[in-house]
Length: 198
Image (cartoon, rainbow, N blue to C red; front, side, top):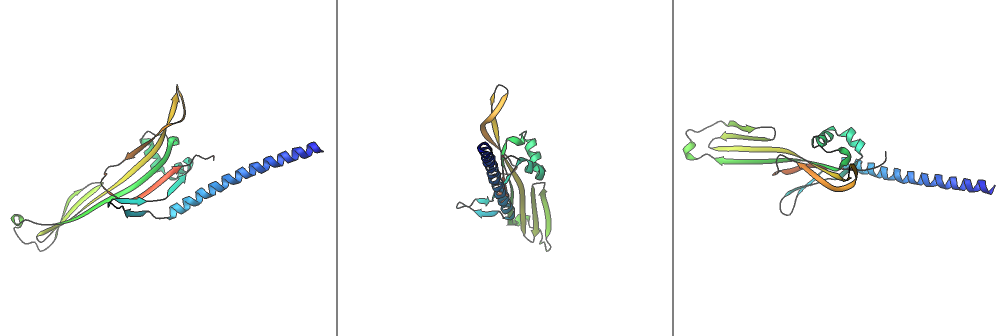
């Protein structure tokens, strides 16, 4: 009888320990999902620093590797183009930038041959990233320069090596790809990959 009670007490204790561990895991997972929902419904805070530089602040999404693979094909493909294995990625950040400059200038007297009553639009330059337009109005030129860019930042780990065995983390590396570094931030997001059991 005592032996049966002892076995019953040990089994009950083991089941309670397992249930408690599962409860903690589910509570952590619910907190992560709640924070992700809050992040997805919040806006990017854009502001200027004391020195006048453009800055953006955003909450960070916490995704599992499988969630990133299912939800964001563009990021996954870009990581593959950089020859980085997705399982080594620690975090990913994306920021879109826009530079806009409007200008106005008077024509010099040597260029004014006749008075222009109507405005003349002059498309000067346009490509995927930049557009330069000008309009001739009377004796002055009004123009606009617009440049749009996307910045991608990937932080990944380099494993230690012993012969042909890879283990642990030797160092973290960051790769940023950009086509225009002199722009104003208009959007930013950050994703941290969580290493959790699924």
